[in-house]
Length: 357
Image 1 (cartoon, rainbow, N blue to C red):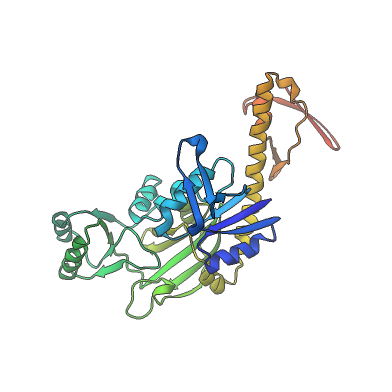
Image 2: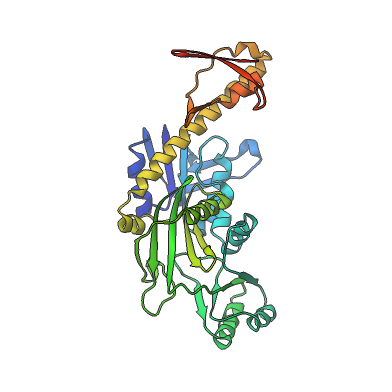
């Protein structure tokens, strides 16, 4: 299989590429800045790299900063039908915008601190008379704790509000959860939290981000925390995602989610080879995607012939789940088996025959 990492060439991307080379026959590094996207009608849409059509890949792991969210969204939208993408196209827009992230998490009942969207000075001033202090103010965009401010009184919040309104953009006011400057980052890959750390803010700082001077240490999440982190990643459409949480009085609260997370800090802290876990996961999912794609193409050929009897033999890779074997979609499409059917299985070494009772 062939794969590519579409990014700005960060250290994390280089680590991921090195790990993927153990699982794919070919892994290419593609620079976002050299990409062009043709957005004509659907039949003419295409992605160009360095002026030439982008090669075909079984898997493309796209990542990058919020400044390239629109580009990443466009690229993956064009490629999604023929290439396995661990990050859904819409995730780049939602995941890089704190407002849209909060809305997506809210729609999926993910626990979060109370949050307000402010778009005018008048509405903001009124809210400041009703909330408890301290509180958090955030810009819609920004990573690594940049754009996060803390107001400990009405006076300081009002001054910040005046400055923010002058920038002519909406912003968030969020409930302050006192955790002593501690938060938790869970690194999600698929349906698993592969690594997690507890981050402690430096003296005089409330942001626990390592880039803001915070210190991280390995931390084991409980089952509920893992479930919240995995559900948050799914809500955004990201199979690879870092989810930041606070431990509130009633349980974990999600405060941030990063669909293009860095690897260096959490890898060094936990001593877990996260790049390897990502690479192994991508290889597995890419193979599943291509098997499904091949099955769909085969079914289209069979249907084009107008006779299901031509599809007597189909070569597939078995999908084992615990003590069960899952039938490929093409099999159920042709046989019309349903979950309510009673089937007769004739079993001998090296052979299984299945018939409807």
